[in-house]
Length: 131
Image 1: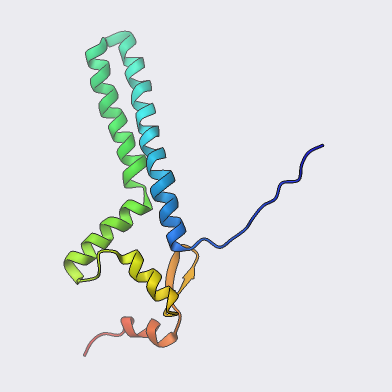
Image 2: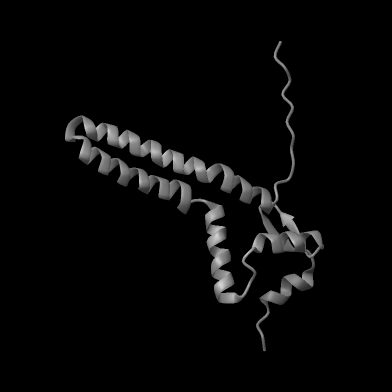
């Protein structure tokens, strides 16, 4: 009577993790912040009036949306890091495209949600100090 569930397993690469955080967790965090704001505003409206309730709901909801949707999101942190590295270090702004290209060419391998150099010489070279 109960149908068998088929599970598909596959390795998640860094691009898949980026898409998950961008398309799923970011809107979900913003939605959770909005829900917290509505709930807080509704509770405050019962005893303090509509003006105070609206202000409190916006402040509390914005704080939760900021914490859940933006600050704790790996996609946002990765994008901000890419901008910082582009400004300070001269790396390309589209860092994920560069890393995917290096992965296709065999320089990097995907190890879960991160890339690592495939060859030992490439792993050791960035760690060495310039003379």
